[in-house]
Every structure is written in C-alpha cells, then in structure tokens.
Amino acid sequence: MELTNISLVNNFLHQQEIRIEINWVVGIKGTLAVSACFFFIYVNGIMLFTLRSKSTFRESSRYILFAHMLFNDSVQLLTSVLLYIFATAYLYLVTAVCTIILFISSTTLKNSPLNLALMSLERYIAICFPLRHSEIATPKRTCIAIGIIWILGSINPIIDVLVLLKTEPTLFLIPMFCTREKLFMSKWQADMYQGFNTFYFVAVGVILLYTYVAIMLEARSVSSDRASATKARNTVLLHAVQLGLCLTSSLYGVIEALLARMTVSVYIHLRYLNFVVLLILPRCLSPLIYGLRDESFRPLFKYYFMCGSKKVKPVLVKF
Image (tube, rainbow, N blue to C red; front, side):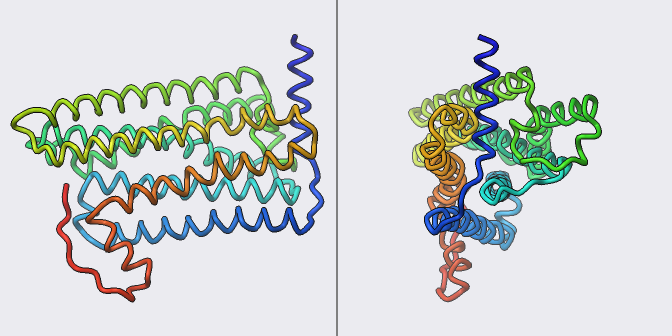
C-alpha cells in the first residue's frame, strides 16, 4: 500500500511538470484564462475604489468586510494566475520566491471562508441586536477581526515554512518547478493542510447555519423589521453559496491529484478545466454577485465602472 501511494505521488509530480507544446489552442486557452483573471481583478479594483469614495462605506463594518473580501480574492486570483503562467511556460523559480507566492496563495485561500463567517455574524448582530450593532460592530473592532482572520489563515503556511527552514535551509536558493506538492512533500504536511481546511469549513458552516436560523426566527417575531430580516437571511444564504465555491477551490489540489492518474493528453485538458472552474470562476463571480445585489453600492459602482459617463442619483446607504 505504501509503495502504491509513493507511486501515485511521484506520478502526480511528474504530471505537473509535463512540458506543453505551445500551439494556437493552448495559447488561446491560456490567454482567455489569464485575461479573465486580470479583468476581474480590475473589476474588484473598481469596487474597492467605490468603497473608498464615500465615508459611509468606509465607516460601516459591513462594507469594510466586503472590501476585505474583494482585496483577499484579488490577491488569490493574482497568485493563482501567476502559478498558472509559470506552470504553462514551464518556468522554474527560486524556492524562496516560490515559497512567498505559495504562502500568500494558501493564506488567502483560508481567509475566504473565515471572512464569510465574519460577514454573517455582522448581519446576525445587525438584525438580532440592532440597538447594539453600532456599539459592537465598530470599524476598529472590524479591522481587529480582519487581523485575526489573517493570523488564523497563516498558521498552516507558517508551520510549513518553519519546517522547511529547519530541515532544508539551503533549498531556498535552488530553482524549482513551483507547486505546493513539490515544496511540501511530507504526508503529514498534506494531512495537516487538509485538516486545517476541513476544520475551517466545518466551523464556518456551523456559524452560517446558526446565523441563518437565528435571523429566520427573528424575521418571524412580531417586533422585528421583517423586510430587513428577510434581506439579511438571503445574504446569509448567499454566504453559504460562497462557502460552497470556496470549498471547491480548496479541493483543487485533490482533484488534480486524481486527474494525474489519467493519460497525459486527458490530464492536460482536464487540468485546464479544473483551473478555470474551481479557481477562477469562484473568485470572479462571488464578489461581483455580492456587490451588484447591494442597492446602495450598485449605482455608484456602475458610475465608476463606466468612467463617470452616466449620472447616478444620490442614494441612502442602508445598514
């Protein structure tokens, strides 16, 4: 059994390093994927600029968390497309540079579900404790919570880097084919990686379920603002969908390892599809859908996206 596992791992690493002949088909597919990434990074940048343009957005914990989601997903998109370009062009990187890129990629991947949990808790406080919302969800406390998210998201990558520094300090100056599997090959590291992902997703799933039920019960009470409660409940449902998209992204490596058992020609095409569907689409669509459904944010975003060519009526920011 152990020999079989070693053989599968070696096969997976070999498949990752396949040299792809750059023809017009590969060129078009690569161009489309990379162009989509940079276009949505640009869209996220416009959204961030929109959020910075009004003090009501900057001072609201809800929009601060939304801005963090945009920033985190943009960084995740950028690192993903960089790793894709390096893999397609078969470029070797110095291990130190590869480690930095993988560190950022892994941290932002884990930040995504944690940020969704925080956004759901913010909506829970706004609906179930409306009189204390401004006291509890202050901009300062929101920024502190975001800092905690980054600490939690970086625990696993920090452990991996410290182990690498301890066991192979000279490795950082050696060129390598940059993938996580090539850099962190120990079985316990793979198990720890999956363990952290599982724990975070289960914990966030429990938080989303709790906040959804609590908001639903509040919506049915006589004294509640039913319209706001219903909207908040739908927001939590959207967060659940976003969590599902984040989960598919975390399964990218697992699915790629399964694809490596196939023939080289099939693996190359399915690997591209795996990259687009599991890494690109979730990071592109999730912030866009969340932002465009916001009645206060949408008109101003359209104004800036169209370079100010259309007039936007003043809107009242609703919390």
